[in-house]
Image 1 (tube, protein in one colour):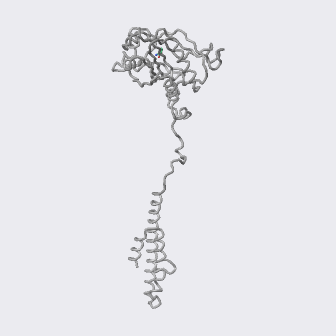
Image 2 (image 1 turned 45 degrees about the horizontal axis):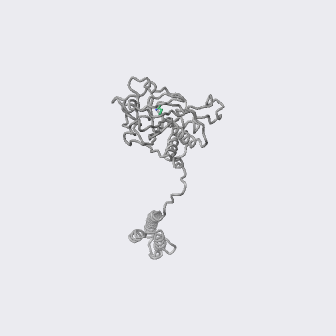
Image 3 (image 1 turned 90 degrees about the vertical axis):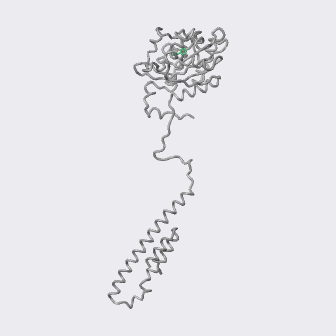
Amino acid sequence: MKQQILADTAAAKTPEQVEQVRIKYLGRKGLVTNFAKNADFGKFSPEEKKNFGQELNALKIFAAEKIQEAAERAAAADSVQTNKHRQADLSVPATGNYKRSGSAHPIAHIQAELETIFEGMGFCVLDSPECETEYGNFESVNIPADHPARDMQDTFWLQNEMVLRTHTSANQVRALKRFGAPFRGIFPGRCFRYESIDPSHENTFFQCEGLMVDKGISVANLIGVMKTLLGEIFKREVKVRLRPGFFPFVEPGFELDLNCLFCGGKGCATCGDGWMELIPCGLVHPNVLHNAGIDPNEYSGFAFGVGLTRLAMMNFGIRDIRYFNSGDVRVLEQFRPLV
Ligand code: PHE
């Protein structure tokens, strides 16, 4: 009987087959249940009855155990089988710990917006190295070693005599050498200066350089592009003014001020006199064109350097520059992912 039970339970693969085996042995008319009746129990001696009873109990337990094991095997196989056919529905919203998704850094948002605006005006977008040669960062843009302008951009020097770039202007000559004139491009990226850090100063910040070189480019083109840019960013018509500003790589050089968006130019706590200093810019210095192998008598151009970090602070109302590099998730998770 035990052999038979082992064979039958091994052969039973589905829950239904196991149930048939259970009925066959342990059911109301089952072979084990009725074993005593079938064995002519009445004719046994008392000694035989005692042994038989013990054996029969052991057999019942044996049968029940084997059937239970077979039932568990069949149930496990059954759920594997069912899951194989069950397709995961990826559109079901995640629950539990999976709710948090990433977001894009505020700088990435501003940069993406600028790239779209400038691409719309036919500018290309160039990536560029964060380490520069001394020539790239300074000399190529008309800042010789003994020039006082170097003091304005005190910075980090590497042991191999390269420098963490102090401005994205370092790419003006690189881009013009590579693509020649006419040229329209922007170079957004991380810049570094030796600063002591406070709510409005960081040693690591972002700029976006812009450069346009063609025949007959004048200050009028510069103002037109700047007004388009600011109008698109702040979603309204803006007023700007130019003040003289000095940068060795532009001539004439300007500080472009934006008519204050908060007070409309009357003067307030944010702007002071109604204007906000926003974008340093100017016409490309003939020496820079010359360094790039472009004839300044044939071509002219404008360049500007947008402070991306500054723009992000204005745009998102971020009052402390230190949040940008803090990596603080409570700050970062307030922004959307980039789409
Ligand atoms: N590179 C300058 C700075 O970082 C900004 C600038 C760019 C000025 C282009 C004029 C033209 O201060």
